[in-house]
Image 1: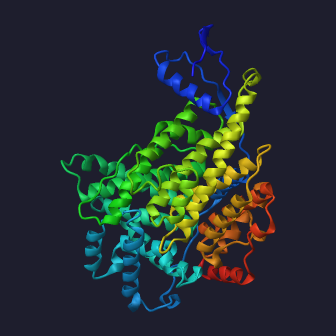
Image 2 (image 1 turned 180 degrees about the vertical axis):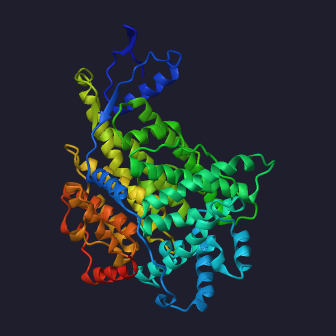
Image 3 (image 1 turned 90 degrees about the vertical axis):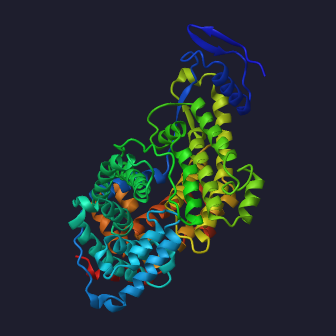
Length: 551
């Protein structure tokens, strides 16, 4: 195809009419390739986009919520309140440690399993090891392996027994120069408990800041080693985790992260790690390629805070980057050759690999975030709108079509990950589902766009699957949710509702998803069969009963 171009008043102007999105992409790619010597000459129209959904309002409200939370004083449960005697603790801890090393550690390898297992088996008193105690607290509240054994209140009571003992030791060792690595590891495990069980974001932020500073203090010493050691590789993993968690906390609490995005592009493997752990490390290395790509990072940052302009060139380039990345994935991570269309859907139905499913979901998650810019594009000035209305409509139509297809595939992948056997919920699952809900809400608000009934059903099944994985006695009925009232009044007293539940952090997360789905329902005008049923009153009674040991 040929284009007629002229230079007028120092700007390059296109005189050939562009009649389709494909031609626009072709011109964009050709201009980048052939006109690159004229840096700054080619001006590609920047634009903003409209984004309104309850998910955004819920996020803003929760930020205010979390900033208002004050630390709680906890009393260590007495031995008599435990479901078994202290003499039976060691066998119980054995089960928790082995469950963690078998199910959780391969997917997020914070420990070198052989070395830690040897250390644990050699402990004469497991209550002297803060890492062991922190793992027990974490596993009790986060692992699917124990969900069916105890109620949420019982798990909270037992987990808090381990948490308090671990934190008592942590308070004594965090400034000990000889126990810095031990401190970092302990904080990584306790962070989940502080955030998702106790709902203590300020305390979590304090400890994750300590972990981050200790990592930065130790990194120069370990970087000087001629060969990577077990300690240096584990430090790298915990440093990446601490940096990302601190950025996330800053984003939630303050609205903007203060730290630069971590530049770790590759995670080393430790000789002797099992095959499954090595496979997941390779997988995360591939995901890091996308998350750390400057172009994609810029586009996604814009979608999360659309206060500036962005160009079509950057959006199209991000789309191309994801497609090239997918094509270059090794076969054991690539679900199918083309990650869109009927081939992808058929491959997903036959898939049995959690890793392939997660990589596939991550690809569509990024595609949705990029296409969000184009669902409701808005040019910056009336002058730009003239002659570009048709192109904007075509951009929106293409984004809606791509969004519907990616949402369908992403929700299918989420369902497979959530309902798979012996799989704990990945933290990414919540991001994936939130992204799908936001996209569907944006599409529903788009003129002349309609979300298919099959996709309405998928979104309903995704929300129900998340609810089913959470303890039934830890879910707030929609009629008692304080989020909508808080959005309207900003009264902090509504926070007390979450404190009535065994795991207030998880209760808040589930409530956020319920609110997001309820808002999606209102935009989609879904049928009654796709509505989330309220919890029965027995669950509420069980939830309230757990607060008898909180002061």
